[in-house]
Length: 175
Image: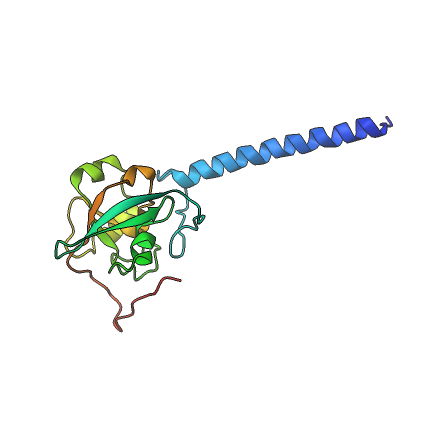
């Protein structure tokens, strides 16, 4: 059957809309898979030095409590890791593995009520936390905690020391 020009254009538009709906469905599934922490997914998403976040993303205030009981309130960008927040503000939080959950040098301690409000650590994070100096029941790795609006006003304790397995004392710099 020969199509006239209008029918041909309508056919192409229908095909494009169909493909666009499939792509949108695939993107929704992929976004859901990235945000869920359940072990049914085969791969863990890891970002080198944390996720990329738009400069105009919303900001909130978080307070880091240092081992000497000093407090520093900083702006955290929603969507970045707490490791990125701390390093952006010059906090003494190492992140020797550069934020890929392969060490415990970005270990933080959360108040119990904050710990209970957030998503549980993954199995990978728990394995790394086993190596953390001064581990507590509310310990988390800053590289695995993605800032959310609900973190507004929260206080986070920085431990007195970290355990770095680098022999040469390497301290990575954010880039």
